[in-house]
Amino acid sequence: VIVVACGERAGEVVETLHEFARMQDPKHGGALMNRTIIICNTSSMPVAARESSIYMGITLGEYYRHMGLKVLLLADSTSRW
Image: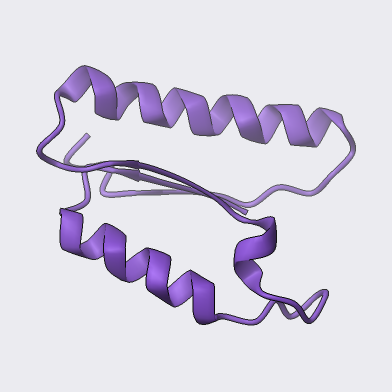
């Protein structure tokens, strides 16, 4: 699971981190955070930084896909990107 927060407000990013830390992974039973990558660039960051976070998430997703793994890539607040 790759979550790209590209333009979220800082409070929303903190909330996401807290929620994912408490969620249970339905596939393996452990914490969902154990198999999650979160890339954060808040709305206060420059547009170039927010854009680079999207490309970083895509690159990581492709890397794991080429390893034969199934990947879920979520990009939130693309309207602020």
